[in-house]
Length: 196
Image (tube, rainbow, N blue to C red):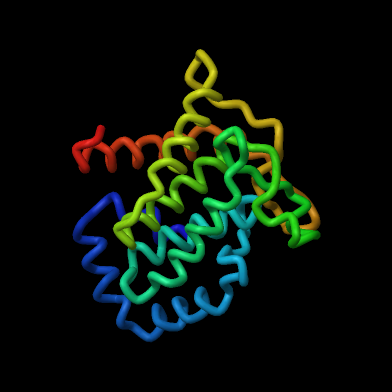
C-alpha cells in the first residue's frame, strides 16, 4: 500500500518501478492484488478502516506500476469509491465492516477516510485519464468545510486498525496529514491542468 506514496516524489522512482514491474516478484504481487479485489471493486484494508483505506492504497500502487495493464481493476475500484460517497460529500466506514462485509464503505464521514477516497480517485484518474471532477470537488469541499479555524480536523471515529475484529486505534494525526495530502494532490492536479 505504501508503494503508491512514492509516485509524486520522483520521476526517476517511477521509471525504476516501471522497469521493476517486469520482475517476477512484482508480477506475483500484481496478480495477488487482482485476485483479492472484491466483487464490488474494493480491497480489504489492514492499517486503516477498512475497504476505503485498502482501495486507496491499491489504486495508488496500480497507478504507479503499469496502469495500462490494470485499467479494468482501477475503473471498477474508482466506481466503487464514487458509489460510497456520503450525502455530505465525504466518505466514512465503520469498524464493523471487518465483522460485517455488507458495511463496506458505509459510515459517518471522517476527514481521514474522505482523504483516502480522494487520494484513490486521484490516482485512478491519473491512471485512466478520466477524473470524476464533481465527486472530487464534493469531497474537497467536505474537507474544507470540516476544517477547524485553527487549520486542524477532528475525528471522533476510530479509523486506525490494530488487529481487525479485535482492536482499533485512534491515530490522531490520520485526521491531519491525510487530508493535507489529498488537498495538495488535488491542488497540484488542478494547477497542472490549468484549472487551479
